[in-house]
Length: 72
Image (cartoon, rainbow, N blue to C red; front, top):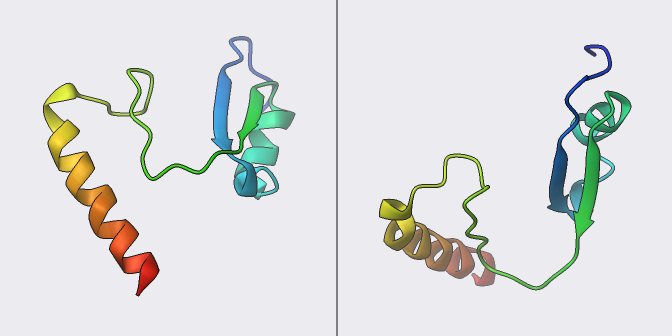
């Protein structure tokens, strides 16, 4: 684990990810990690990692495909 951060981030993750070692490490480093609980298929945000509006259609197609895989 790296040390404490001087520039803490506010990070949103799925509730079921809060107990994962990586999230616990982020908390120990001083970041603020929020658990999000909602029934969603996809999250689009300008703050999402690697978000680019030109990929929205691709993201929608991928979310639909992933949702089909889960139901099978």
